[in-house]
Image 1 (cartoon, one colour):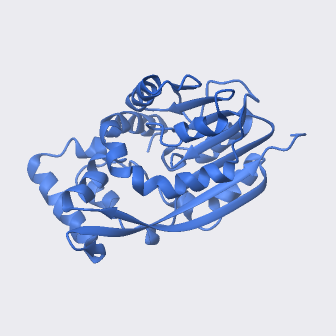
Image 2: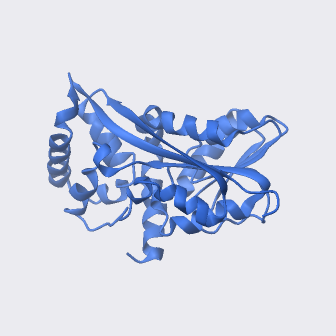
Image 3: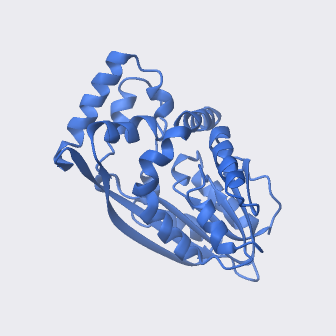
Length: 275
């Protein structure tokens, strides 16, 4: 897939998903995001950049940890995500958090600007994730810390059939390498290659709880990476895709709802004082 096209798909796809992202994914992503923040070790007064920040699910906890003497910049490729996060910051009086639309592979900030760089579940969508990790390294001050979370192995994520189900109906290639970074020690290797030291990796298993068929389908089709493709479906195609997806997660049904297995990989590293 052409990298420029992939970036457009991500930008406008997440614009479509912006209003639905938090209702469907806040609780499900929280374990990975919490661990990422813990591994980053944000301290009062730190300057933090949160890359692919979405609606700010990790940006605002990072702002709490950095305190009023710190500064947090959230960046995302989606205008709608940036607008939603900026509105929330203004409504809640979080003056030391700001948001801007930026590509994770080309951050419009100077070298050595931040104490901490975060990327929570965004690297899977970059055409060249290694470039995005190198950007995290570039913007860190000497002695800075970085932490990133990605989804784990495909066979550990019970919702994974959403991609072939959508691609069978409209050619998207929205996430051609989605699970690659979560396989083995791939993300740790990317951090090492970017120049990070003291690289640490943790893999965690979770259950994604959805109360109804509609909730499970809403998360899969409306609130996530295939939202743009889904928006092109006619009503009969949507019904057919829903039925196929529900069949794929039927083994995880729990009463009227679902407990779908998932896996995350969280990696952290440091930029040495002399690098």
